[in-house]
Length: 462
Image (cartoon, rainbow, N blue to C red; front, side, top):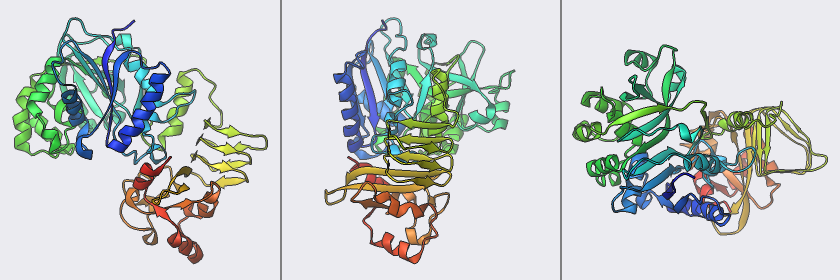
C-alpha cells in the first residue's frame, strides 16, 4: 500500500465555496473514503481575493506551517467561479458528476493519492489542476532525485499551443518551459520531437521541501498583493536554457500582473530549482471545465472505462426516466432530471434539473437548467437559465449572439438575466429566450420578473 499522505487539500476561491466543498468531503470521509490522507482540508483564498494557483499553493503551505521535510501534501486546485460551466458553479466543477458514477474529484483524487512517495525525508508536495480528469498509471510517475518533477503527455503542436509545453533533453531534464507557444515558437525552441509531437503540460507537478522552501522565501506573501500563477510566474523560470529575458517575456506575454523588475529579481532563485519532466504513457486527459466539453469528455471516459457508449451520444446521469418518456436527438448531457414525457433535442444540448411532464423540444446547442434555490428574501424558488453551450459567461455572449440591449449590458456572469420561478415547471415561460428576438409582451414579462445574475445564483442554490 502506498505511503499515506499527511494532507489532502482542496482549494476554493472563497468561504462560501469552501463550505460547499467541506460538505462534499465530509460525506466522503463518513463513507470511509480518502483514507489515504490523515487530514483533509479545504483552504479558501485569503480574504476572498483570488491569489492564483501559485499564490494558493504558497498559502496552503504557509497554513500548514513548520518544516515540510518528511511530509506528503496533495493540493488539488479547485477554486474558480465556473463561468464556463455555470450549471455546476454552485457545487464547483471539481464535483461535476461523471458517467458511471462518482465525480471528477473522486476519479482524480483516487489516482493522485496512489502516486509514489519519495525516498528518504525530502518531503513531497503535489499540486494538481482540478478542472481536468487526468488518468494514468501512478506507478509510472518516477520522481526526479530533487527539485520538481512535472508530468507531460505528447500531443499535437496545435493542441499544445493552447497550454503549457515542456522542452526536455534526452535525460528528461527540463530545457525550457513555454506558456501557450505558437507553432513557430515550438519549432524554434525544440519543443517538437521527431514524430512531430509536443510534450504538453498536464497540470501536475511534484516538488520536494527544498523547492517549496525556495518559493516561500522568494515570494513571501506577495500573493496577497497580486496573483501568482504556478505555471506563469514559476514554471517559466525553470529549465537549464531559461534566461531572465525569456522568463520576463514569457510571464508578461501570458498576462503576469507583476512588473519586469520584480520578475527579474525573482528569476535567479526560481531558476536554480532543478526540474525534470516525465512522460505519462497511455494517459487520459479530459477537460470538464466548459459546458461544451461535458458530452465529448463524458463519452471519451465511457470508452476508456470500456462501458457501452450510446450511439446517439446522449448521456443521462442521475435522472429518472419513466414510462412514456423518450429522448431523441444527439450529443447531449442530461443530468438530475425527471422525465415523464418526450424530450426532443436539436443536438449538442445540456439539460440539468428539469422536470419534463409534457413534451419538450429544445433547439441545437441550447442549455436549459431549472435549479432549486432561494430568493434574496429567503423564500424557495427555481432558477431558470436558458443559454447556449458556447456562451462563456465571461463576456456579453448570450445564446451565441451579443447580449440584446434590453437584456442588459456587460458580462453575462454579472447580468440580471435569469428569472426565479415558484414552480419547477415555470421554466416553460422562458423558453423563448433561446431566440432573444422577443415580443413586447415577453419583454414586459421579463422586466417584471424577479431576476438574478449567475454570480448570485451560484450562492443561492440549495
